Amino acid sequence: MSEPHPNQFALLGQRRFAPFFWTQFAGAANDNLFKFAFTVMVTYQLGVSWLQPSMAGLVIGALFILPFLLFSATAGQITDKIEKTRIIRFVKNLEIAIMLLAGAGFMAGNAVLLLACVFFMGLHSTLFGPVKFALLPQVLNERELTGGNGMVEMGTFVAILLGNVAGGLLVAMPGIGHSAVALACLGLALAGRLVAQFIPKAPATDPGLVVNWNPVSETWRNLKLAHENIVVFRSLLGISWMWFFGAVFLSQFPSFAKDVLHGDEQVASALLVVFSVGIGTGALLCEVLSRRHIEIGLVPLGAIGMSACAIEIFLSTYHLPPVTAINLAQFLSNHAYWRVMLDLFLLSLCAGLYSVPMYALIQMRSQSTHRARIIAANNILNALFMIASAVLAGLLLSAGFTVPQIFLFTGIANAVVAAYIFLLVPEYLLRFVAWVLSRCVYRFKVRGDKNIPTQGAAILACNHVSFVDAVLLMAASPRPIYFLMDHRIFRVPVLGRLFRLAKAIPVAPHKDDPATYEAAFERAAQVLREGDLLAIFPEGGITKDGQLQPFKGGIMKIVERARADGVDAPVVPMALTNLWGSYFSRIEQGGAMVRPFRRGVFSRVGLNVGAPVAAAELRPEPLRECVAGLLAQG
Image (cartoon, rainbow, N blue to C red; front, side, top):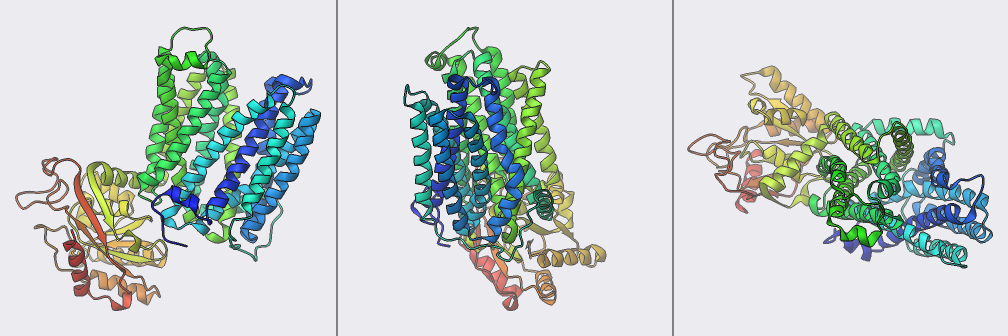
């Protein structure tokens, strides 16, 4: 892979990303142009007795989702087994054939043929889904993955929006509407296939895989594979919940626009535009807010925003003016409706912040040999959660709930589900705390973060200045870190609880507590055997005068024990700068955490990361000199 680019938009100028982006963009636009045009045609033009207009959207949506339930497991296996550009080009060829059939259906006004094409387009999307997310980690590095996912998410929702708008406009053209839709669908399919020809080859990750054609047993096996990494598995559930949440709002936009906002069809379309723009904006913001790393600390931020905005939408409906029916111009001219639009925009923006880091985390943490199968299992879960959202919304409406009350219920449910997930997987909450501290309390700048390994075991050796050193290291690392820390720090209120959630390893001097001392080094050895990051503060305690203290021998014991286990974990020297004298550090005239603003607000602090030192070459004094040199860089 090449070096990272200045921002995510630069990827559009790179062959490794741009052809794939425009291929998926054309496919998403075509899906939605075709489906929406067909829905409008059935609702307003065909008059098919056996497919009532009120049921058309539901039937078309169900037929489109059905292949995800039936074929996702098979699609995931094929994606892992076969070179990915072959699959993409086959899928695009299939799309051309489907659109030729659909064109005939539009020209003849044949609803049965078009329903069959809906199912086949669902199959097309089912086959493309695992490739879409499994390809990105093969062509983008860790620093580009969040931005790449943000671009794909933004592109998908813009394509959905444009497809829906184009489908509605084209099919309504007097006399030539059906022909125009047929040509547009075929044109998009051909454009997608043409661009797909330029996607570079992406080798198969498990070419020896024997395909299991039983979707039920394969889905179960894939979920068990995902469950081996509990963070990945819970992230699958978190993404599926986001689709549940989003499906509730998207499905209720027409009713919300008509019965609550008293607007016409254009108002309903405006809600869709705002929602799509919000999702795209949130997806693009992820790279900026994460500083080009996979920052799952954004997930709790997104979840909090989703709940707050859903509840706020409910509250905003109490202040709407009493009107009978308005068009889009009247809707936009009344400031009372701007609050609803702003709430909806912020809600969808937060959904973008919530989903992009989760997708990037799954891609990075899943084993490459079965990454596509895990993504396929996630597609099945997404489909099931969306079906469940439709059923639940229907039940609530039948029970007499209004649309705003359903939004309120969904917002409260989201808060409960999010809290449950974050308690089960505290890494999300910890990263959120680290993100807030490094961006809202301090102005935190990291230099040399490319030296932090994105894979494999390593030991991070850092100076110890304050009670939040570990939290700042968390914010700087793209991966979870296990900390070896003085047992006394666990007695600090709030911070002690935080470090327990982080599964920090308490260590005590051998003379004071031999059992804790030995248990700490055994746990540290286990962390390195499992290929994770271990952080240690070799000074053995927080500095009392702001100066770098002598390094103790514990780090050599860890390295020697790891080498005895066959793990040559490199040691990465680090130096936290400008923290001395801050609220969380000691000061010469007193203790820590007194006078909150003694250094002002948003004080500048930093982390300098040096080049890794091979385990065989490690010595305490040269390592200390290296950390001192990084500290002197300021």
